[in-house]
Length: 310
Image 1 (cartoon, rainbow, N blue to C red):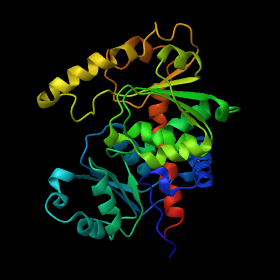
Image 2 (tube, rainbow, N blue to C red):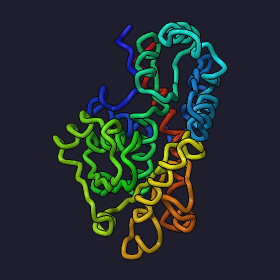
Image 3 (cartoon, rainbow, N blue to C red):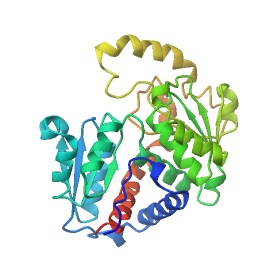
Image 4 (cartoon, helix red, strand yellow):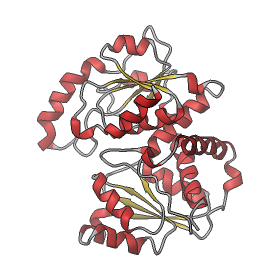
């Protein structure tokens, strides 16, 4: 058996492997019927410590369309809460073909991987969101099929897991990424990802949001407050401080009045904060296409990982 290939972040994937996966995701999207029933008799374990809409639905629907089966596991209702994570992972991987885990701590994801004998997919952790970034690039490719690699992407918001994965994947694909990140906590920044992007000369920072927007083809934003904290009373003070600091960086019609850029957001959306409802529903929004593309991106990931693991 060949060495197990995982998707924890893009750090362990070469530029060529990432490009091949993106091309495959495009093929899967255009030829869904070819893969119907492809994973008959195989199961995906979906382990959730964080809440989810898109990750759960897209992975579960994807496995169903591929002819396989998805098993939902709530961290709080499982023995992952009681035991060593690698032990539970070793057991779990003896029953399924692949594991997708959406965990709060990157360290726990690495422990799960260490015990697993099947591919592990990061469905989101505090440092990375690789599945989302593949869907993001798939969206840009489908929107600009002829020259997608020449388009300029601008991420506006808090430097978080989404930003880290965007930095990695755009570096691998040679896509220019501008970051407008007034909040960039040291614990959320992955230096290896930034070094990869600097070596490829694909990354820049801009403090002038008007200038950043004017020079971009796609504008991408995300929640200013992690989803598990947004409605947490104990986080209320920090939430209010973040909102006050970030409101000048809201995606709205005034900001984009001199720009033709398309608008992206990985969802869930807090309308009236990082973006207005008007922009979400505008003709330039490709947010819901972006969300839909999670399905085909994740199918491609599962198929590619299982292609090398039998």
